[in-house]
Length: 486
Image (cartoon, rainbow, N blue to C red; front, side, top):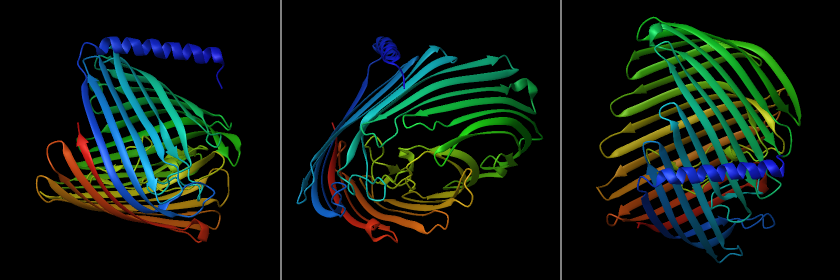
């Protein structure tokens, strides 16, 4: 961890930078938006703490005011969002909750179109579910919360060398701090650099890439990913291009509580075929330190539909806290509703599983999605399959399946009705005997009373099926609320 002097210096630099940004922000007026959500909710799946271990019924009264501020100028862009959530529980021995959620994001152009700085910060509460190690949304888990703060800053330099080449260099630092030692505070430093061909080369494709990512966890076991590559290719026509990439990766991977260094020269061949402006097909084949690797990316856009199919193989590390590995129903890490863009329904993120140490994984992921749209109706479907292998551990594989659907109908200019669902299944271990299935169905009706007021009501059913009786959960939730744009 950093020494106190370094921390003080960083705080002074951040404070000086904030004052500089504010001085530039005075030239352009702020855009203010205030909201107020008031709702009543019934749920039979409230978990108060680790000691209760069983679900209870409750009526929940919620009040959630919010304020957002945005400013966009020629050199400076700022966005500030805040939402305060208060929930009072009736009929259950659960402490009322009050949680602020704050988020800020900024970008400042030091040299127009060449050098810019960006920064973001978040503060709020996240959920820590002791049942199976998964974190669920506010209607399913109400107690056992922890505070967190996360912030990051980066600098980017872009340069064009006439028509011959263009380069981009980015350096970024991110930090996260949690209020309990069960989660891994971390600091990540990432450097990326690229040099690409300019228009003078016409049909010749070339580029150079370098990335260096180092993450320091409070609990130790720090992964490092370093990759350098060069690409050479040729564009035969507007429809077809081929390229060859070779490089070296120098990774420090985490394997069952130990770190090991893997250094390997890799290569792959890529083909890009675009038969029409609406259809794109990308293929690649090569070899990395874990063996042969393949890739596929197919997209097609029609007048009223979108289709995609992809396959990807890569290495990732899940840390001790692993926020991206949780099931978050209805809210994201900032406490805002997690919505499916085509339907507007709050759905579930990918459901994975917890670990107590950092590990490096090889992910082999298939994913597919489609969206069908008419004048008043939108239907969306998506699914994924992930075969995850532990690096350096024989026969240890985990399998994840997930799918979701959404259907929305605009009844008129004021009202809409929607139906959505999510399903996921994961199997863990050598024999994959530890399996869980999670699914949710949600129906929603929204009616705009006037230009500033909207009435929303919804009903959902949630189930978690497990061979372990203590990990089985089922729940029903009924929601009615009013959203007011102040």
